[in-house]
Image (cartoon, rainbow, N blue to C red; front, side, top):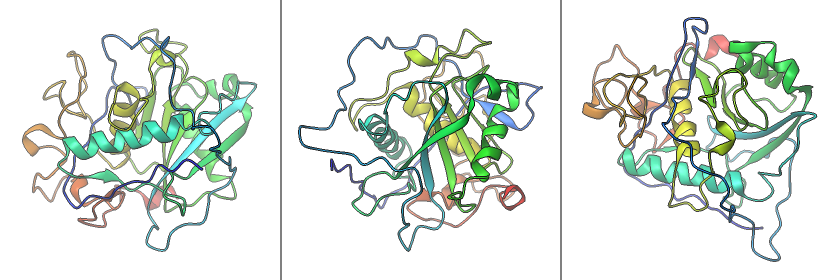
Amino acid sequence: MKKLAITITSILILSACGGGDSSSPETITAPIVTQSPDTTTPINTQPTLGDTYTRVTTDQGDQPQSSNTVHILYAVPSGNEDKGRDKNYQLQTSILAANTWFNDISSGKQLKLDLQDNGDVDITFWPMTETNTELHQSDWFMRDTIEEKLKQMDWFNPDKLYVVYFEGSHQRSCGDASVNGGHMVGVYLHNATLNSAYDCSRNQFSTNEDSHGYVEHVLIHEVVHALGVSHTSDTGKDLMYAGSEAWDPEYVDLNNDDYFMHGDTNKVDILYSVFLIPNDGDELPPLWRNND
């Protein structure tokens, strides 16, 4: 099997996300970029000749020290094409690229990913029984509906934060998360059906661990939302910015006054999140246990 091991550094790190609406009080969506990259360039993430990836439809055994981890799901709604993004290493490469970028902009933090014994990212394939059209009936609250379906799976673990790469569309966004203790982040891979600004299918996955783009930015941004962080208005360079500026994140909490290393005990500080490494603390997201 092609091995994509993760190096756990001993330094500190940062994070960001975007947009919202009064009709979706608990859900925050990914910000819009001014132009999505073209996807005509081939994705060079196929394993080399002889390498194989064994798809799994359940969570693999956990390492003893990893009770609170970020677990990856590749979900395909009924009737939609399975593009095998887990089997061709497309997801693994992008996730590791996102973690490398997050490490760089945060001076050392990374997502505490759920890993297989060999160091590869543990990805569960989820063939859903619901169609994309059926899930669209929840409109803004589609993520909540998917999360409820997730909690019914026999492999669901209430100690984990799940990132669902959804081989379908949201009505209005390419990614969303709840800041109020939700156990799931959604990353939607097809174009939003009611908001043409979100041309999600044109967003390329990174082809190596040292590059990054919108898909990787959205992953980190939405996970930080799930840790209890709302949008900021400082600058489009901030990971968690939402506003009129183009979103091009380069910093985790510019000026350290909103959500990272700010020293204010009355606000969430992701420095101490149990879902990030290195472990500077063991804080769960606000209202986490209320949503088991």
